[in-house]
Amino acid sequence: MSRIKLTERVIDRLAAPDPSGKQVLHWDADLKGFGVLCSGVTNSKTYIVQRTLPDGRTRRVTVAAANEIDLAKAREEAAEMLVELRKGRDPKLRSATLQTTLDGYLKKKGEKLSDASVQNYKTMVERHLSAWLSKPLTFITRKDVEDRHAAIAKEIAEAGGGKGETSANAAMRTLRLLWNFAAKNDPSLPANPVNLRGDWFEEKRRDRIVETNEMPGFYNAVIALPNPVARDYILFVLFTGLRRREAAMLKWDHIDFDQRLIRIPADNTKAKRKLDLPMTDFVRNLLVARRSVGKDTSGYVFPSHGKKTGYIAEPKFPLDAVGKACGISVSVHDLRRTFITVAEETEISPMALKALVNHSLGKDVTEGYVQMRVERLRAPAQKVADSLKSLCGIFQSMMKR
Image (cartoon, rainbow, N blue to C red; front, top):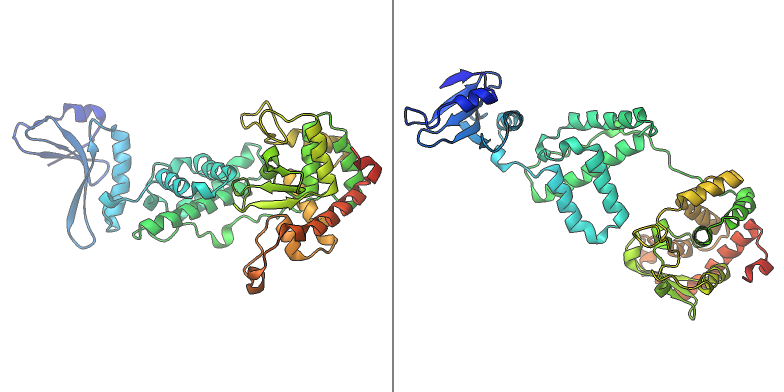
């Protein structure tokens, strides 16, 4: 055995097959336990690692053939494998990588996740944890997590994207979720390294709504929008409390004018529960007016020809225009929050309110027996609509569109 400073050029010059006719190990002078094994009968050269295990046994593990990966990559993988050997773990039984774990999770859970959730998981991992994608999970330590958590927030702040604390927390919550998923299939995984305890960044829960005194100005600014699709979409969300995609993906096939119902399929809801929503007078009149201009070939109630989806994907631009016109800047989710706030103030039953916005009725024993029928929701829904109309300053004569 010899110990030399391994470089690409040195490795190229090593004899293989070795003149002795036997295998010869050339150890790296820089990384102890890493070397190149030259065959005595063929021209193969193989990167290997070797180390004494905690129980006294010696373990030699192949990293890769020298013609498969470059020296820098081999040295990096060797260093990681040597750490595993020092801990008494067999590198040949290395865990799945972060990338394969993400892929496996999305493949198994994909049908139950919304498109937005799938994209969010991918963004959190592929954007903020990209350096770990090809690493086995076992190489991600608690210190790695703590350092990366702080770095994400700093990187976003320095890029002018805000403080970044929310994204840093979200990235680590995603990692924690994926680690727990992997652990179910690999009991040998160490404890989940995402254990930040008091080091999570504080996140303030968003509580923005259109306040009572702002309603008339907001409504008039929406009515003045030049784009009728955006105008009707925003009003529809305000008067139904639906989530952004639930409203955007609404099709005419989901509208039952005879029964005065909106039937949203489970695949289109965040909760993956179908939602049968009674039409209030405001919502029915809005939909009748939209139908009168002709149904779009896409089948969507709120179409967008500039989007691959076919429906209005993100109403940020019209909401920004509304904000400039009346000084009230809100998101679609803020409108949902406004609906829920107004609904609660009308003192409809809490269970009716939950049903209207498709929230779970809860795990209470009594609530578990309740079947909230759609006809039971008509009066509460109309009560909320009447309150919203009053707050917006809408009179009955204006409703006959």
